[in-house]
Amino acid sequence: MLINPDSTRFYVREIIPGTSSTFDIIGINLDQSQTLLMTANTDTVGIGGVLNVQNNLNVSGNIGYTGTVTLVVPVLNTFEPFNITDISAMVMCDITSNGGAAVIASGVVWSTSAKPTVDLVTKTTDGTSMGQYTSTITGLTESTTYYVRAYATNANGTGYGAEMTFTTPMQGTTVIDYDGNVYNMVVIGTQTWMASNLKTTRLNDGTVITHAADSATWVNLLTSGYAWYNSDAVTYADYGILYNWTTVNTGLLCPTGWHVPSEPEWTTLTTFLGGNFVAGGKLKETGTTHWLLPNGNATDEFGFTALPGGLRSFMGPFAGVGDSGNFWTSTRISTDPTSVSMYSMYGELMIMMTSDRSGLSVRCMKD
Image (tube, rainbow, N blue to C red; front, side):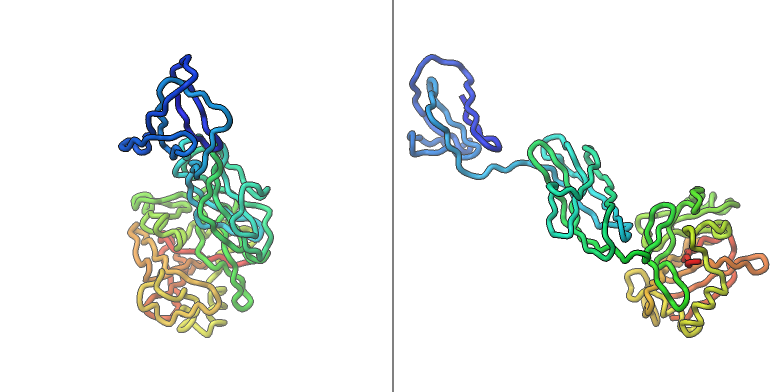
């Protein structure tokens, strides 16, 4: 017979039925290498120990158990929340182990207090599969800090990922594109701009923009198209997407109520900032997280946070990430449109003509 602990009690299970009403304890094996003599009422069986008996074991009363039993629950990760608006947010999670038992529920749980648990009603239910999943949190309140954890439950209990925090912005300070990407707004003078580069893959009517990842497709493309720098959406996610000007010229690239600014609108911005020679520095993100040294004269005084997304030439190669930020205008002069550029070496902002088959970044402006 065996005596084994589970999560709450001991099992007593007979292996070979016998008829004797007495037994002799012959030893206790604790670690498969040591056997100790055992005296009734004074010795104990440790976790993982095996009680060896001769003949049969009759038990009257309770079998006591003291110690700690570890229940194996799922193991998972919580990643940084993203697409945060005044009423919603998204969180990616990853179940890396089911704890030896099938997952019966998973999702995220959130609260305005630390260490939220599944006892709360503020949670999502996202299925029972292993691996990654993304939860959408809704019903949030503006300008509020929340604590969120991924969770997964099996028969043994619930495991939690690391706790993350995020703060919802004030209502009316973010805008969402057709793909669901969220952008902060920044007011500079009389204009309202997005505070990061556009990264939608669809026009605001839902039309899919052609993804021209390879050079051959890019060179021969006569319709709207986009590419991530070096065709790498993971490494260069912060910099946004590079679009050809045909996409800009649809008039549908920015979210409804927004547009790609014209050259005169960029000129209004630079005039407010003190002119072209200083405007670039006042718009560029400070530091060298994205810009190469020396990132001259960068102050980011208004939170525009211009990034050096580089460009894609009309022949297909990529160039300039970290060194230059290049942005389309909606203005065409003669045969080619104009663009705005800023550089790591100095704080000047330059406006120039650019081939409409090049790939540049886009900053949208509110109508």
